[in-house]
Amino acid sequence: MNDKILFVDDDHNILAAIQRQLHKQYQVVCASSGQDGLDVIEKEGPFSIVVADMQMPKMNGITFLKKVKEITPDSVRLMLTGNADQQTAIDAVNEGNVFRFMNKPCRPEQLISALDAALNQYRLIHAERDLLQGTVMGSIKLLVDILSIAAPTISGGDMAIQKTSTEVLRALKVENTWDMNMATMLSHISYITLPQEILAKIQSAENLSPGEQRMVDHMPQTGHKLLAHIPRLKKVANIVLYQEKNFDGSGFPSDSVSGEDIPIESRILKVLHELKNLEKSKMIKADQALELMQENIHRYDPQVLKTVAWFFSAEEDEITQLSHKAVTVNELQPDQILASNVETENGLLLYAAGYKLSEAIVERLINYHQFQKIKEPIKVSVPVD
Image (tube, rainbow, N blue to C red; front, side, top):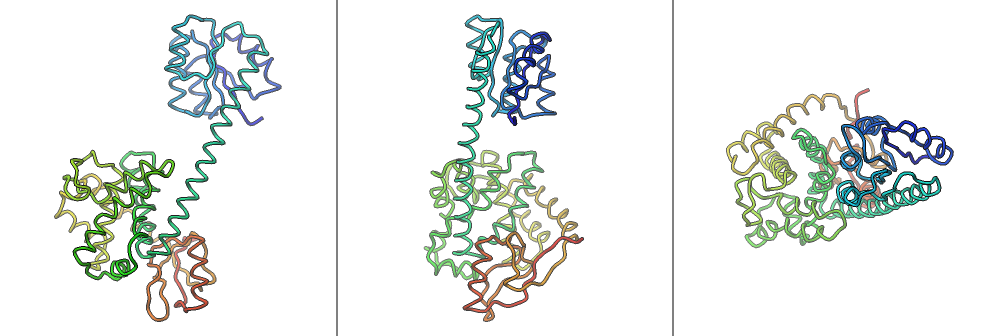
């Protein structure tokens, strides 16, 4: 019995009866007040089902179930109460989002039937979520692998800042980092639509013609279109759309959005992408690039810029905890981080230092090496023991 059920009621006799009736079929936990119930959820949760009485001291059942919804929204909520007036039922449904409303006294077979229905609902929610999550993550992995093959140096830059972007988001007290992660990985997905000639120019830092530059400037909009209709990626698509927007409202897209109305994830990507571009184009370190960015402060969220600067100063200490290992192409492994560029023997750059290898990229490099030799050894980063 993996599904746990929490019963909350201030009547100890009722809780004892429930334990006697249900302990053989279900894993039952009891609490005698709303606050005790919240404490139990924090210590022993999550629970598949939460059943609450209505009339309890200090915190009634509706208030309690509203808090449960905030803390563990997946828990299926039921109300078991002697207060059977219509308004209580309406409030329970509307505010506590209860799945079933049951009156005391409730016959054991009625209670078991309601609990079984609630468990089926809980499992259905999770089955649909797992299916959707698997589909979305599989689609994202495929898109990232395609981008890494079509534009490895661009994709490599995105992968290199993935950890930084989520750490900066956490430092800014934003806990939901899933969208940030996805947006970082997919921020340049639109580059798969660019002609190879333009990609080659970008990867070799050649000047673009005005028409080519306009095409590149509109890549965030193209990325938004590619991602907007994928399940769960609507917010990610919006982050990608605004990743080049200046904090003062100038730049692309040319709308009225500015300042803190720009998604925080977009503001972080703006700083990190331009930081990496400056490091690469001017061959300077992060601290020097950040000083240059301070001269154009209107382009960036000041708090994000300050947090990124703090992060890079702290990151210097972490780098000292890594060492490098030299490996052959055939010894490369997924999730290793390149500590040196991967180049062919005739000098063609395939993947830049800082790139985190995926399974598809390792396979590609092994296959590539059979027909056009790659310089060996290749350095990868490993933790110091």
